[in-house]
Amino acid sequence: MSWYSRKCPDKMDFAMNQSLNNLVLKVEKFSTILVDKGFGQIQQVTSSPHVMCFQCRVPGKTVYLYIGRGVVYQGFDFGTNKVPAFLRTQDKFLQFARKNWRGMQLIKISSSDCDRVLCLEGKMGPYQQKAFFFWRGRDLFFANLRLDNQKAELFTSWEGKRNLDLNLGLELEISTIFSELGYGTVEFGQQKSKDFNFSEYLEEFDSIGASASKKTKDQKTIEKMTEELKRFDDLAVIEKFKETPLEDLKVAGEGRFKVSFRGLEGHYKKREYLFDKIKGWRKSKARLEERIASLNLRLEGSKNSKKELDRKFKTVQPIWKVEKNKVQIKKKSDHIEFTYKDWRCFLGRNAHENDFIRKEKAKKDDWWLHLEGMKSGHLIVKTEGKTPDQSDLVTLGSALVELCGQEYSDIPLVFTQVKNLKGVKGVPGSVTFKKEKHLKVIYDQEWRQNLTFIE
Image (cartoon, rainbow, N blue to C red; front, side, top):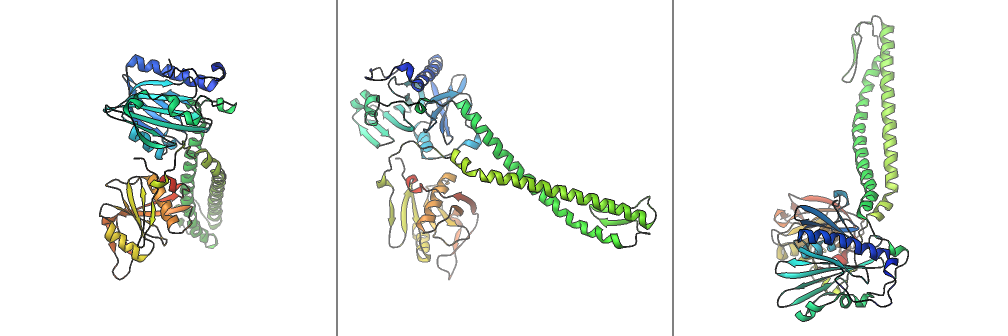
């Protein structure tokens, strides 16, 4: 039974809307599990570039809920497969989901009979909570409603957060939340009527995962073969014996290329035997070189398809409002200052400013970032005791490059905590460091948008 029962006027026949029909049927099937088990608990949240995954524990079993992130991955599905490690990604949508929905006790799941909207309803500590997902065309919009005995708080991805009167929050309908987005009037074309299936999605990307695994295996094989090929340099040692008298010689060469003449008498028999040995080793060397060339050719083909892979693995983002007032990049007289998440960041543009932010702004547990082997400003990040992960370093590295007026697609970062830095006496702006870490990240053109954090 749909939780939203108001009739939608001028809506196309329900049977004709296959995507909406699929959504409702899947919701009804999972609702049966919830009713049977009583409740579920969202224990973990992971994501691929295309699908958000909630690990939901119901008494006696674990079920995974899949939320399409948009484009061709729309709608809802559930099953027993988690997102494979090679497909997992992190972004601000995942951060929001973990902050607001991980640990939520799931009591009810429902869908609208007017449009493709999914609702997860439950409790989060002392709060009642509803999470809404609305697929309009190729876009995903989402909202989160949280209520307690005193207030109601609504976050929408296209407007941000606002407080509501408690009575309004209790009576808030889906038609009100999504009315400005055209809820109930969205038309479904042929392409928009498709609904993703997680099993088919895994099959699509399993081949890519296998290809990536094969590529890694090929690279390791090439490395081993190249080392093996170097050993054939020693073959020159034994070739020197071809023109020397072998009559009284019992052994020629050394190491791997060592030939014993046991049982052979006379110069010519030994010479013929030596030639055959050298000929066989040369053939082995040629076969090894051909194998390395073949593997390199296959890897080159993999590089040619990298753009296609990048396109497939590009993270699909729901519709977010860019809150420019929260993307604060202040260019002060002695440094640049900006905010990422709830971390304050300070960037020096020259030697004087580098020393200033290190001495005046930084504490020993803050993090220091620099472009390895290149001229760049120093970036101090006040992470409040947290360690930045790879997605954080992509954003921070991209900010470091652009705010320093440089252009790099591959960004080689070196970073460590401020307590591991020591200024160089007599050389302004220079430091020595220890316990450093190294990471190469790819420049993210949307780094400014990533500075928007959710309170």
